[in-house]
Length: 381
Image (tube, rainbow, N blue to C red; front, side):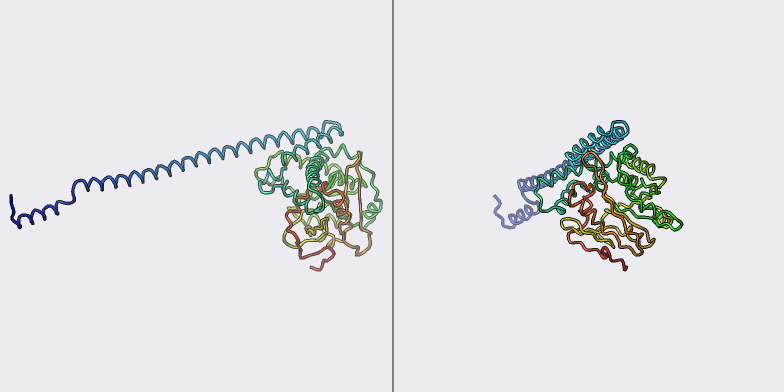
C-alpha cells in the first residue's frame, strides 16, 4: 500500500482530469434525450394540429361550395317556376302560387339580395325596420307583418312578370288634367314618385293608361352583383321589358348611367317614374317623416330634377285588396312655382299597412335620430 502523499495527490489530480463519474454522464444523456423527445412531441403536435386544420378548411370550403351550388339550383328552379306560372297559369292560380312562395321564403329567410351579396341579412333588417315603424305593436303582430312582407315581395315579382295580362284589370285613368299638361306646344314633363310598396308595377302601368310616354328609372344591380344567380337578372330584366311594353314606347333608364338623359326627357315633355325609397345614411338628402316616428332621408335626385326642369309631379300608390287593384293618386296643382311633394300619401299608407312596404329593410341603413343636411321644402343648397 502506497502511503506517499505526493503519489496520492497526483492520483487525485488525474482523477479530476478524467472527468465526472460514469453514472453522472448517464444522467446528463438521459436528460438531453428527454428534452429531444419533448421537442419532438411538440413538433408532432403542431404538425398534427396543422394537418387537422387543413382538413377542416378543405371540408369547410367544400361545404360552402356545395351550399352555394344548392342555393344556385334552388334559385334557378324558383325563378323558372315563377316565370312559367306568370305566363301560363290563370291569374287567380298565379297569385295563389305567389302567396305560397312568399310564405316559403319567409320560413327560410330567403331573399335574393341576401343570397347575392352575403352582406345584407334582409330578414333581421326588415324586423328591426318594422319595430321602428310600429314600436307600440306587440311582437306577434310584427312577426305576422314580417311574413306578409315576404308575401308582398313575391306577389310584386309575379305581378311584374304577369303585367301584360294584368293591365286590363286596372282601373281607368282618372287624371285627364295630366293629359292636358302634355298637349299644346309647350309641354312639361312629370316626375312620378313611388315607393317599393304594394303593387308597384301595376301602378306604373296604370300611370301610362292616359296615353303618355312613360319612362321607368330603376337600378340594374342584379346585373352587376357578383355571385348572384343569372336567373334573378332574367326575372327583373323581363319585368323591365314588360314595363317598356306597357309604357307607350317609354324606355328604361338605369340610375347608375347618364343622369342627363332624365333632364332631357323631362324638358321634352316626357314622364319619368322614380322609386325614391332608396335611403342613404350620409350625404345630402330630402327628409320625410314616416310612422314610428321615423325621419328618413331620400336621395335628392328626384327633387333636383323637379327644380331644374320645372316639371309637374305625382305621388302614386297601388294596392291589390279584396280582389281588385286600388289606386291612391296625388298630383301637383299645376301652378307656377308649385310646392314640392311631401309624400304624405305614402306615409299614410305605410302607417296603415307597413307590411306592404316590401323594401322596408332599407330603413335599417339609416341610424336612429338621423338628420340630413337638406330637409324637404328646403332647396337653397
